[in-house]
Every structure is written in structure tokens, then in C-alpha cells.
Length: 385
Image 1 (cartoon, rainbow, N blue to C red):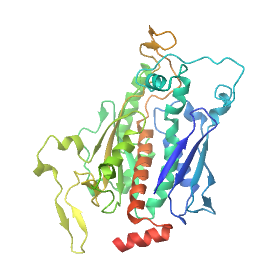
Image 2: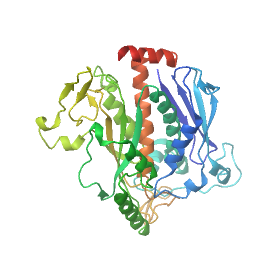
Image 3: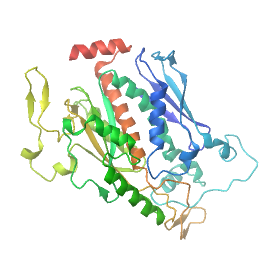
């Protein structure tokens, strides 16, 4: 069984991840994980924190001489900003009186977290609910990506829109809609958008929001190529690949919507226009004439690219804060609190989406082809081909 846990606060000493269930003998390259961590820190619209942190993973257990042992893998990502917060975030009692955070930011976990856990200082909520935690998931996803690559799978993301700027017509989701040079363009774009003209317009839209002390949401797309037929199951609701992807993507901070394949668009037409016709070629390979299902039918992968589109709301920390309430007094106030923050996180959220896709596929892959070693898993996979 594959599973993982993350721990750590935004301004604590570090983030820690424990990953269990990876097969023994899997070759792991630290550079691949570090590269994903850098990609998460990039994207136009990011804030000052990204200039401080230089995220890199440190292995503490489960890997020896570049290969997994089959035992739990423990990883750590250091928070370089910790030196500026050591007193405020110290685990031991401190003599100095710390100013409590009491002004709620609308749209953040500030209010619900304080109510649920009985905190009078919202700092206790901010530190764990912060998107800083997603660096942990990107590190875990970096491990998973290296397992999936052994089975011919790759995962990519790109930005479709920011606020009202984006592709005028829905992008096709067929196999040939994602050439290799497209991903090169995405990685070279500060918006992680393959269209250079759209990239410029997105940046202009973010700058406009920044001038008004506002933030920007948008939509990103994540897809997995080379996914074999048969991952997931319809036997129980929580074993469906679509259910797992839904939970994974909706767990990303600021995500408010998700669709698989043609999603909401398919609800506005008829069955004859939506369902993907199945064919078999002369070599005996299965394929579909279209991919409106986004690679999943009946909760099971069907061999087509797995395509997920995710809607990200504007982040709730505004340079020109909205009216709110002060929890310490119960009074309505003109402005909520401002924390150092980003203007747009959509490109970075796409990288987190890649990690969550990798995690879900790893769990499903181990479930179907599981073995104690990578060689055993590969034998099981080849025998199913």
C-alpha cells in the first residue's frame, strides 16, 4: 500500500515528508525532485517569499546509494526564512510577548481554523494552512514521477487562463494535441503557457491586478501520457480513479473546481457528440477516435491521455485588504490583515497538480502491478501488456 504524510509549518525549521510503499530498487535522482521544487517556486506573479527560499530536498531514510530500500522514505525541505521567525515559531515557551494575529482574511482558513481548533491567535492556523505545505507534495510527487517513468508515463501541466485572459476556444484533448515542442514552450514561459501572445496578455492582466492591490485566479490543465488501461476500479466509490483525482486536485489550496476531459462542456450537448468511439488497429492496440472522457471510463483508465482541468480562485491575501472582523474584539473592521503574498499562483498550482496526479497514479499503479521490488512490478506490468 502506498501512502504519505507531510508535516511542518510555513515559517518553521523545515517541511518533512514520510513516504511508504515504494518498491525496493527504484533509482532516485535528487536533481529531478529539486527541479520540480524550483518549478513550483516559479511563474509570474509570485511574491517575495520565493526570493528567500531555495527549495531542495534532503533524504533522511529509505534510500541508499541512489536506490530505494523498500522501507519508508523520509525527506526534508529546509525553510530558509526560519531564521527570521525563530522566536515567533519556537517550539519552546518564550519570554517575549508575541503579538497575536486576530484580523481574519476573507476566503482564507483564518476564520474556520480558529473556530474549529479554538485558537485566539490566527498565526496557529496560518502556519499549517499556508500553501507552503505544497512544497512537501511536490517533493513526494517527484519521487512518484520517477516510478511512473519506469512504466512509460509522463506528466505535464500548463496554464489555460488567468482571470478573463485565455484560449478563446477549448483546447482539444486528443493524443496529437500535445506535441513535445509544446512542453518546451510551456517550460520557457513565465506563465507556463505555450502561447507566447497569451503569455504576454496574462502578465499584463496580473500587473493590472497588482496595481489595484488585487489577486488573480485562473485555470490550469494537467495531463498524464502513457497511462495503461486498467488503473482504478468501479467496484467501490473511493477506488475510482476519477474520485481519487477529484480529492487530490481539490486538496490543493485555492482550488475550487475540477473537470475531467470535456467536463462541463459535455453536459451541454448530446451523447452522440460526447462518447469516444473505440477502435483496434492491425497490431491489436486499442484506441479511441476522441478523448472527451479524459482518459477515464467507469472510474478506470482507458489508455488515452489522462486530462484534468482545475480552477484556482484568486488567493485571499490582498494588498488592499477587504473588510472583516477582529476575533479578539468581535468588532467589524474596515480592513483584514495583509501577509506577504503572491498576486497569482496559477502556474505554480499547475506544478502542484502534476505532483498530485503522480501521487494518485502511483497509488493505482502499485495497487494493480504491486511488488516488493521494482523488477517484480515491471514483470507484472509486462505480463499484462
